[in-house]
Image 1 (cartoon, helix red, strand yellow):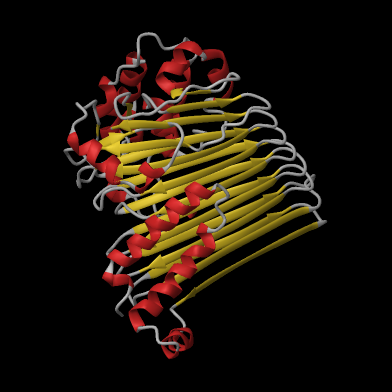
Image 2 (cartoon, rainbow, N blue to C red; image 1 turned 30 degrees about the vertical axis):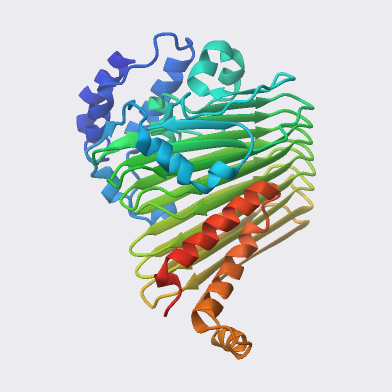
Length: 457
């Protein structure tokens, strides 16, 4: 792999302005595990070639015209290394609302698995819950079949960068007919000490036919520096599988967070994806799902809660590739101060995908005159027997609703808080797993209570 990187750097002069030269040079000392399977270096090389060819996206790219990632491109990149787990990581974990969740817990510090902080319970029936680095040694054939097949490096610079340089993450395999009764937690804790430290988690979730699984993926931090998290999660759901994935991004105020979530779902499966963007200076979730089997249902559901000068971006493509499928997207944003929210949803219906039922809704609540929401719901339909709708709203709290609550003896601040929480609750209530729903509800409620900027206006 080192020779390949050197060749890339030597040829960089013809593509020197795409923003990749510094990063690739900084990462040129990357060393893969000596025991990595033979098929992995070519996959890494493919990711690196895609990244160096495309470079960082700019505002001239249609899919990025509302989100300027120039501050990320200017970071003094270097890969975050392993750290000795100490009281800071334990304290962040203990203070997190997720500590109340039962079930398996895989904890990663700077993207590297920490057995000390993790809680992996015994499993039966062929279920696998472990770090991706260890699974690459024992389950290489299964992983080769799926890794990099859904989060395509071509056309996604950040997924390509992750593919080239990831070192660890989570591997979850639930065979056909198996059920994991309690949620599986994936907790990523950043302990970055310097600006530009880069963390590259890679998760692979495989749910076989007729299986059931809930995954909670969260991102926390012990420090507040301008580090960069670039995560990729691939989810495969077999026929009649039921999968729920909840992602919570609550990184440091100076951090940058880019994530790719990609999946392919089988016949009559039921897949729900929930995204909660609460932290980071700039965050973006690139979500792409392929509805590859007939009669399945897919829910994409999200909430972004921003303040100061935060930017939270959700960009998604739902590809209807088979008939009789339903996809529903619901994303709400609560924006304060000079923060920004971006929503770009695209539903693509293939000619064969007759009887498609697709809905796309984005609602934004502005708590400040300086807050901004950019929304672009989009339909691309090549079938003629479908039911597809989309809509978007941007507005402020309804004065009549506040007045109504005040006439019932409720103070102004509490009235505002109740209305804002109800707006967020539309998203939270769609989480099927009750323990997870209760934890997320508490997290959002506590955040609203603790932040006076969301109340007294």
